[in-house]
Amino acid sequence: NGKQIGDKAFDNISPGTYYPAVSCYSDISVKMNFGPHFVYPLKDDMQPVSDLSSVPPNPEDVLHTVLSTSNEGKKPFLSKKVDERVVTAFKDLVKKESAIRREAYLLHASMQKKDILKLREERSLPTNDLEDALEDTPMEMDQQYASMHY
Image (cartoon, rainbow, N blue to C red; front, side, top):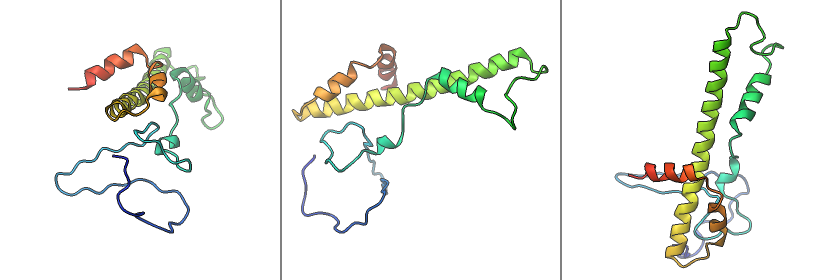
């Protein structure tokens, strides 16, 4: 609920990188928020775990990277023996897989913003930063989001 209960849990913690962990027993469930948006703002010296990942690249950029990567000094698909249908199928698969990965990432980011927006509205907290971010959400992602809730 954003309110401190008691004193600090720990003092004199060694500087370093810490990763979140949860241990549950029995029928317990936990909902974790790794960012980048939160119901209550982070302190200035904190960064969300979500900063450790970046938006996956566009499918065309992934394909370019895959095709320009050398294999023992040879560029892929330069052999005359390579069937053009195999090359086309490979390129299509690379683009499809990278598109799925990118869309899943962006959909998750959109869902997270909507969840945090709802929680802030319930608590009468400012939502300006989230409303601006939600305007960038593509329509097809909103439709996917709606179909995922059952």
